[in-house]
Length: 150
Image (cartoon, rainbow, N blue to C red; front, side, top):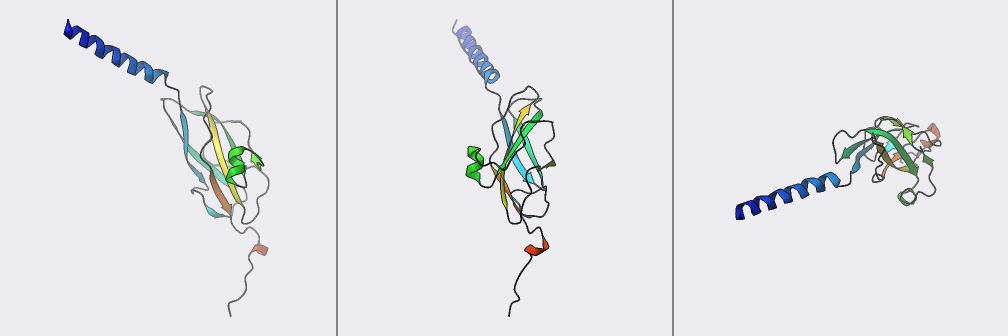
């Protein structure tokens, strides 16, 4: 009798553990945000830089089906979604590499903060990624001015 109670108890615990894992909320995490193949690069000389990210999911067979990118001039505006300089809106694609910035023209020495969120092949959305940034280099010959050292 005691042996069957122990077996029943172990089976019940295993069942609850398995069911708990099945009922756990699916999560998608975005990481390794890059701009022009670099993490938070400074001195980008491309007027429409390319962005990339990776996704990690808590379940198998999860694929990206859409993304949304937003950019701002500082991280606080980005987090609060105010004063955004560009919002891609939801773009239906599985592309997560070489996504081209399509916002207003960028200027020399400008720092752009950005983050991304995605939707999976089941229509579930992720949260926003941690903010990342890139900083523009000197884009025109007029920006390259210096005095001679004497």
